[in-house]
Length: 217
Image 1 (cartoon, helix red, strand yellow):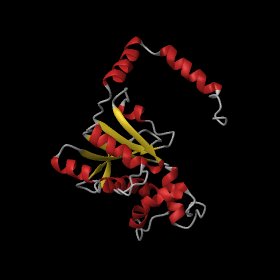
Image 2 (cartoon, rainbow, N blue to C red):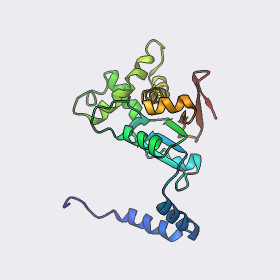
Image 3 (tube, one colour):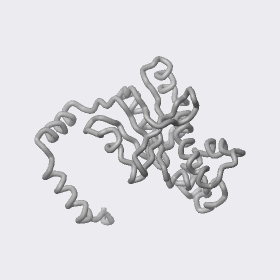
Image 4 (spheres, rainbow, N blue to C red):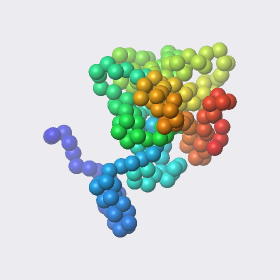
């Protein structure tokens, strides 16, 4: 591939520094995982945002979590239409092949994808509101959450903040449209969880189905 270039020197330096500081126990752990395979108990669906680090929240050791990232941590509804569905494929593999017991959707403060969705649906981002925009088409999954904010009298920033948590709820609702998820939830072999991370101070809020809101953990 003639367009592929060598890695930037900064990344090469980081790689070499990582190799130098690896302990013998860590190397042995990776070797064991490579030989025996992975057996995570939880899948985490979160945003592509570079500021969202799973390891700083839950202590991400090798083999702990099956992690899937996409813009605005969205889950599409179940659509077995023979087309390519990356997020749905990751969920299917985690639930059916890995038999995870917990599926966590994690949103976050200052999500650019959520803001883009709001602006697109509010008529403020026409560049996203076009069939040729992959981002805009993807973010339209959040339209039910956007519509739910109508009539609440929220200002611009308050609407963005509310929509960040709606992104979690819409994804949780869409997860239940997958038969292999709803069946496992019904039998108690799989639990769904919704969380929202404040990247300013590291705070975490957990969705409570009984109250219908998020509360600090």
